[in-house]
Image (cartoon, rainbow, N blue to C red; front, side, top):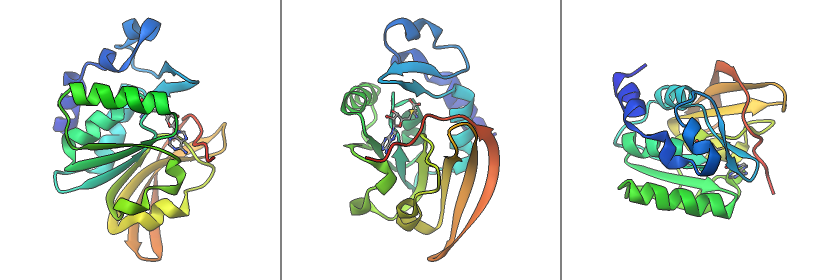
Length: 189
Ligand code: SAH
């Protein structure tokens, strides 16, 4: 893994993204509840996914599933610009406040259905999805730039795989399986 990602993982205090009883378990390398039946992801997995996406300071990144904003901070640190979508308003607003307080000014927070992406600002150099749909949403592939990459978990509720998708041309992608994972479902309204 890129040393810069590990350094950032070590430097970011995860307790800032937690409230109430979860806060004192911030150092535990596992998912934790953030309310509304949602979870903050496991730190080592967030670092792994960030590394796999190969984000740099020229990239416009779309993130689906803001949640606590923890993964968003990684993306904002390594990217030029992050557009992050969350369907639960309270989570989006809280994450936005936290990220602002941490000094990030390159993040646009959107409340909506991320399964549809966000066509207004497409194409994206990178897409990070942190909730699992049954299949890869075609609109996300459409909004990815040719040559761009997406990290996404998908599959059944009980068995999902994390894959790296590369957009090879306007009508073709390649997929590389990274890991077996368990994410909360991507809910499409
Ligand atoms: N990366 C986040 C993990 C959040 S869990 C973190 O580290 O905190 C996944 C999030 O995806 C949840 O907050 C859930 O509400 C959100 N989500 C689920 N379906 C969605 C959809 N269709 N559009 C946007 N967000 C969605």
